Amino acid sequence: MSKTKVYWLIFKGILKKQISKRYSKEFTKDLLKKTKTEYNAMISRAPDIGGKENKLIMNIYAGGIFIACYKAADKAISPEIMGNIILDGLKQSKIVKFVCKGQDQTTQKFKNWVSSVSKWTQENADKYPANWIMREDNSKHDTGTYFEFSRCGLCELCKLENCTELAPYLCETDYVTASFGKSKLIRKSTLAEGASCCDFWYVNK
Image 1 (cartoon, rainbow, N blue to C red):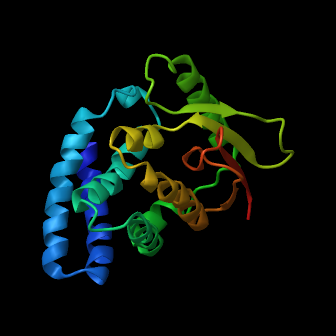
Image 2: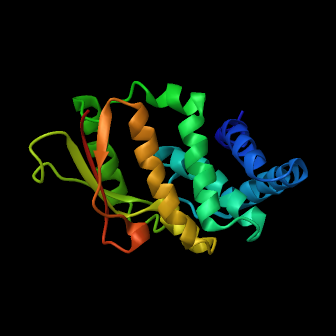
């Protein structure tokens, strides 16, 4: 089974539960059908960002479902309500909680991952102009793990799909996933809100 199908099966349930709380059964069923079609088309037309070599590509597969749902609704759902659907859905998802509960972004293993991904994204920044650019920085804080994104693949996808108003809500999902794990996320800025970078500072809870 492809990665996109796996993510669709997981996130379809999250969307169905939250949309049906707010809209009719018929609306929900129709929207999910349109979302699947839009998602498959969007992933097919999305710019190449390195495929399996890119350790961040799963964020496109997951976040792309929310973008596809918002687009498929064709303004029948406002950005604010879509944001609530996304955030409430993740907060209440047992699968997301299970996947994230053991994560610790302050470990040496995670720091090594940050170093590896930062190096790859910077080396391939020109080759994949719609991909993230990640930079680690060990000088800004004495504790925890700190890194920045000066370019975001999801923000770039939102630009291409003409739905930049949804991007800030996708940024908020980082807090939700962190809340289930062993680390606390501290952030001062995001690209989606017009800043020069998205900053990630993870510390022990």
